[in-house]
Amino acid sequence: MPIYLFASGYGLFFSLGKDNTLIVKKNGIRILKLLINFWIVLIMFMGIAFLAGKPEAFSGGFTKFLLNFFLLSNSYNGAWWYLQTYVIHVLLAPLLIKLIKRYNSISMIVLSGIIYLVSYVERIKHLLDLGDNAELIMVVNALVLVGTSQFAFVIGIIFAKERIYSKLHNKFYNMKFKNVLCLLGILLLVVLHAFYESMIIAPFTAIAFICLFNLIKKSIFMERLLTVLGNHSTNLWLTHMFIYISIFPELIFAPRYPILIFIWLIVLCLLFSFVINAIYFPILKKTVGKNVLIVDKQHDKPSEIKISG
Image 1 (cartoon, helix red, strand yellow):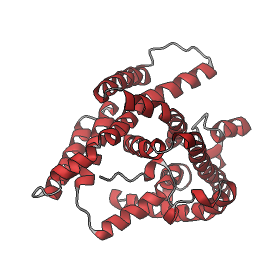
Image 2 (cartoon, helix red, strand yellow):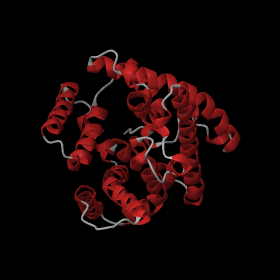
Image 3 (cartoon, helix red, strand yellow):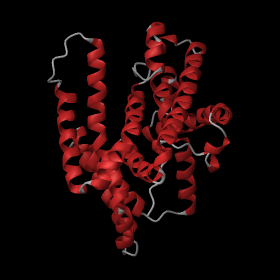
Image 4 (cartoon, one colour):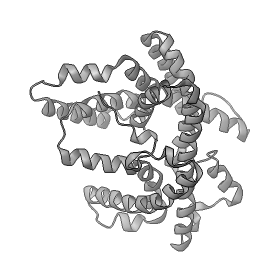
């Protein structure tokens, strides 16, 4: 998720920084598009769960449905916690971008890092005694999630402001054995995370991964494959836990071997994504108009921002 957050901050810096008069409209459309996509997935998989004989995947009654529908709960799908957090980040983005443009980048990183550490401690240790107040718990939980996620988001904005990726690209573009060294760097990040599993390092390893991955010279086939996956990545994120945990676990784990299970999961998620998009784009066209449909039907969402020099 820190990769999405970084990419979101990076992309929003450019998309919101061009015309201040349209920021509110842009953000409104951006959030509406995501919600439409989310609601389609929610309703579709409720129907699938019912037909598959697993209505318990959406237990909790109408109240629970409304809480999930309006992003106040992620009880149906644990991966959906980021929906609410992303919406909050989009709403805060104009202010954050304005502050980061005005003040020294190092100072903003330090301030963001302090907020991240405090929020992380509260998320893990639960130091605040909130009692049984459900509403207060919900608000504090939302603030803590924003606090722990804003660091990668802010770093993404700063990377865009300082053109850091462009500088890295220009400096290392002609370096010998660049691909090999970058792949070794990514492997070291994986090993580091394997030995030190704490979430606290996730933003740092994610940012390092993005830098290394983008420096790798990719084949045309790989670029096209990544583009396809990027165009469907939001749907993959919204649906994958339903497929491998809630509704079709037996089907997903049938191949038995991890790599085959992973590929099979991606394939099924992509198949569902094509169906979702077949519903999504006509609705989007009627609700927000043709002018917001991006070329090649790419959504303006966090997972699909391309970082380039």
